[in-house]
Image 1 (cartoon, rainbow, N blue to C red):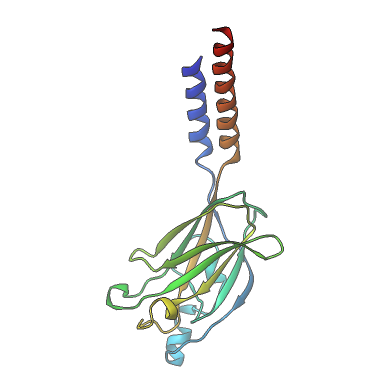
Image 2 (cartoon, rainbow, N blue to C red):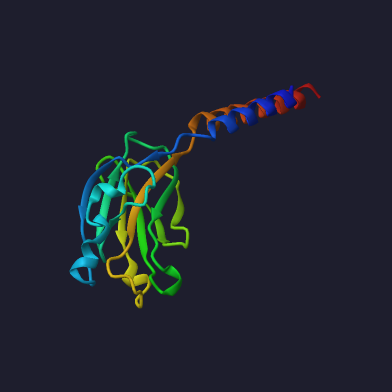
Length: 193
């Protein structure tokens, strides 16, 4: 019985663990920061188009500008918790083009739920943070200058996409039930002995 129960829990956990990744599909608000580059640098690559931060990773991006921010929404209105992934377009990180962003989760009233910390532009551009509490929106705030005072970047963090992989609640529920069932079996054995 224990082997069958454990196998069922693992199977349910594995199938529920493949929860669909959801990409941001709406810009709730954006506040562009500053650009220290030339006019052509500050507008090249359609980098001021906020919609470039939406959908799956495609190479198009929205530059936050130094100190700028963006709040993004999703088709799903509330996530129980999950992994938040950002994809940043990295230009020459290896030679000092360092950029960073502070990531916050927000509730349905757009109040901060959790500060997920600072993400930097990795050479492959991707970062992952774990959100531990329910949330509805994601806010990204450029902190490039405070984290990297000598960066060669001229307009901060470049957002290509933001995705959420929600924690699957059914798997957690199955695991809880299996644990409670196991405790009941142990208690029965102790009572019978």
